[in-house]
Image 1 (cartoon, rainbow, N blue to C red):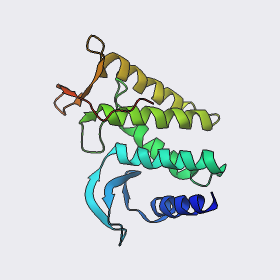
Image 2: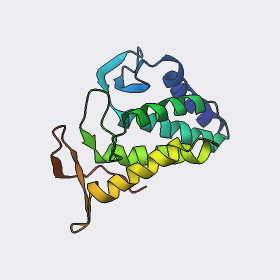
Image 3: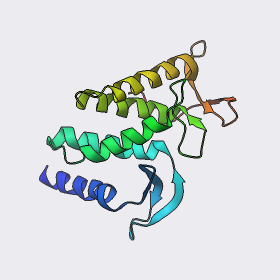
Image 4: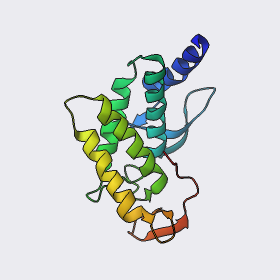
Length: 165
């Protein structure tokens, strides 16, 4: 278990201390040897997955050392949130991904349960949940849409990469 914690810290410390970010979110890929950006996209999904990994670390090792980074990610996601509750892919990309919104919901709900005296994360997670239920879920087919294009058109492609959190 001790080695697991050291390995997790090594990876998460990179993101906390060294990874280049934009608007509080991480780029979609980094070179494993140099730590430099390998892709120049800034999407909420990868940032939230890093936040979820930090949350798992926090819970498994009872160590809040990544809380500040998680809050930074959460705040960045909330800044992107649309009035309907959906969260677009990132700054400058208005595409809405159902997969990313499910991840956003999970992460914001976690922060809402951990940060006392700040309901912003809980409220944001509830807005995402409403959007997922009212817009992204196709009840008659029992499935989620893939997302929404930047022009507002629903993408009815099958969302095969969504989570069942």
